[in-house]
Amino acid sequence: MVMDLNYNRMISFSAVFIQLLLVVSVIIGAISALKPEDCEVCFKVVEKFGNSLSADIRKDPKKIEDEFRKFCKGSKSKENRFCYYLGGLDESATGILGELSKPLSWSMPADKICEKLKKKDNQICDLRFDKTIDLKTVDLKKLKVRDLKKILNDWDETCDGCLEKSDFIKRIEELKPQYVHSEL
Image (cartoon, rainbow, N blue to C red):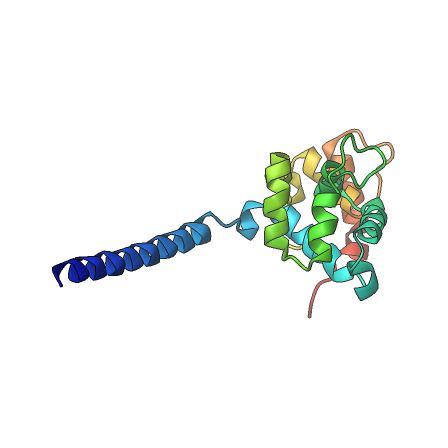
């Protein structure tokens, strides 16, 4: 009888211990999960690309890879760099498109795909989007030339013959009505 009592206590202790381990592992998993702000470019590109796929393409990893290459042709800035890291551009040195296409074909969420990609190449989550400049309120004279050039580049405009900061500011002011719309 005493032996059965000790055995039952040991079994119940083991059950409680296993439940405690499960709770701890769930908490650790939730804490260590990749957050959108930790890998913002990856999250945005994977979601944007995934949402652009039709149902028949989404099922086939090879078709997904072909579509991603097409998607990358029109990419700019950080999205272009992301495409480069994955191998979606012709000039890409390496290619890990399979790490994107297979999970997408399984309908894996963007956060999990980005976690897998980060394990393959840490640089993927080092990408950050540039801060947006509110052209309605910003004083262009206080911006750096690099930022002024970025504004023009974002608009797909050039500034031929611009040598000084004032030249870039003048060009942006000329184009501002075309690209910046004030709300009533």
